[in-house]
Image (cartoon, rainbow, N blue to C red; front, side, top):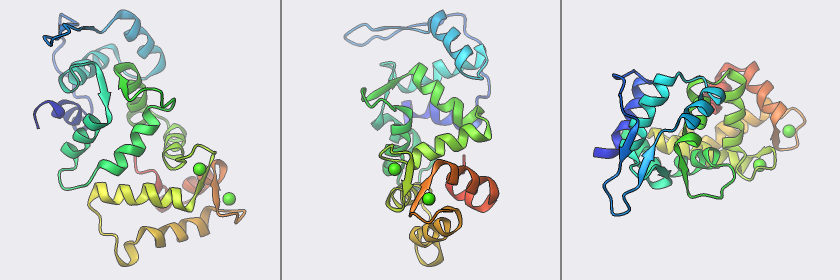
Length: 214
Ligand SMILES: [Ca+2]
Ligand SMILES: [Ca+2]
């Protein structure tokens, strides 16, 4: 799987530190001779915006460049990374959803290192509330600040596909969704509002594990 491995391994090992590098400048030898540099400004921004240490940022940068020599992570590469982590799963659908949360303005088709680090900061270093906030955005596909049954079904099924989980019988995601809605849709309007999502996940560990496993 060659170049797609570094980010995957990094995630698996959870930023085990490699030796520090004296040079932060990489010359890409492609036709455009793109010079990619981890500038002090980017490091400073990430130190302010994330909980990563300078050394962790540098290590992630090397992993990121190994996977994405252009300096941009597009959806296809993202799917490859997930496929590497879940070799028997079908990651495409889930990656579409995660990539959407990584790229909220939807203006670009690929994300740069700074955006990538801010996104994984939530899943690796976020507080429980920050992780729930991210999970809510994952399910709220159309961004109207509430989760419909079809949105939850769409994301949950893609998660089952990723994990290669059986979808039959009592594992059927639609059955689980009916149960989840009956428990956390407090005002019975068939939508999960953000407050309902937060209080439901906090009150019920099993539901939190299904909806926000990160
Ligand atoms: Ca919605
Ligand atoms: Ca509701």
